[in-house]
Length: 210
Image (tube, rainbow, N blue to C red; front, top):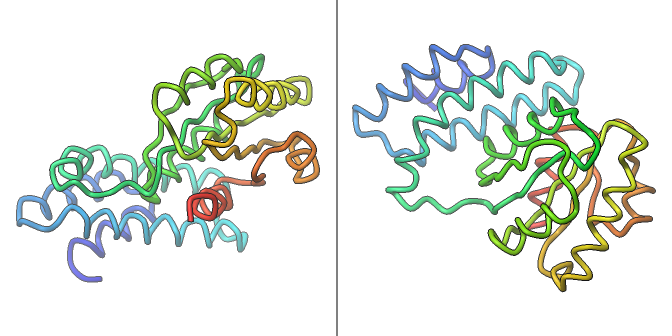
C-alpha cells in the first residue's frame, strides 16, 4: 500500500474523516480504481476489528474509525456501481420490535459496509412482518437482528417463525446480537449465528455467505 491508499488506511485508523475524504477524492481524480480504494478501506476496518478484539481499541475508537470509513464510502459508492464492483452480499439489519437501541446495530451496519457488504438498515423497533417484507422485496443473503433488552429478545424468535411461515427461512441466513444475547439463545431459537460484537459480526457474516 502506498501514497493515497496508505493515507486512506491511516485516516480510518485515526478516525480522521477529513483526511479520508480528501484522499479518496484526490485518488479518484488521479484515476485510481475505486475497487483498490475500497480494498484499502476493508483492510483498515479489518485492522480496527483486530485492535478492538485485542483491547487496544474500545467502542468509541471503533465508532470514530467506522465513521471515517463511511465518509470515504459515500464518495466511492457511485463509482463502485459504475465499475460494477460485486458486493460481498446483501444484509437486512434492524433492532427488533420494542427496542429503540441502535448504537450497536449502527456500528455493525457500518462495519459490514466497510467489509464490502451492501446493507439495508430498517432502523429500530422492527417487527417480524417488516423483516419478512424486506426479505420478500430485497432477497438478502442475511438478516441481522439486534436486541439490547431481555424483554425484546422474544421478537427474534417470532421473526424466525414468521420467516418460516412465509416460506422464506431456507432462503436467508439469520444472525443475532446484542448485550443479553448468547450463542445458546441463538441455537435455541434456530438462528444461524450469534456475534458478541461488531468486529466478530463481520467475520460471522462472511462465514454465512462463504
